[in-house]
Image 1: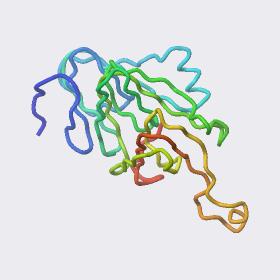
Image 2: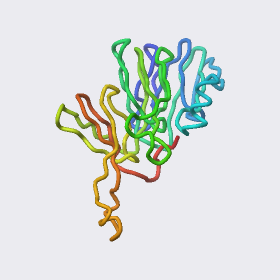
Image 3: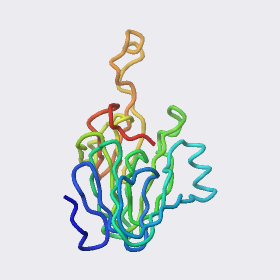
Image 4: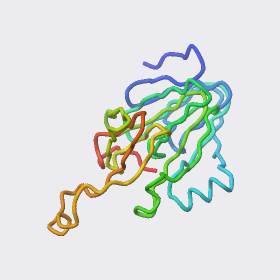
Length: 215
């Protein structure tokens, strides 16, 4: 049973949805609202010419809406699991796949950037970089795996399974099988994203599947 909110901001309603008590404005992906109550207005969020061109070229980005007013709104996406990330300091930053973003505080900003070291693979790898102080609601197909990355101990992740990572990590592409193996049929694991440095990477426990959010 949904109880009235005691303070503004987002909370987990359950494992599949986030409740946002709006007192001003929040941002969410278009079409993610499943219910609301109160005096709220929903408007398409313009991203500016720069963001629009980046999205057109890269395929990455978010179709956003602004939710303004006072009331409570529930967000969900394809019954995917929901999680809330806290950005405690204004300098906090996180690289995230746009398909995994559900909603976020208007105090956070985001930009579309190329994944360094992977810009020539498959037309390029691009993710959204979130910066600021506030909270970010994330969806994931299954319960995500958070893997620490330490200096001298890189982590390799499937590009279809990666959710996000610490922005300060160095990235590159890694080929894990020889051309001879590929000719003989291959293992199905050809290229991975390599992350070096100190931080963490978040991976979803599936590459495809029902309920997997798409950008």
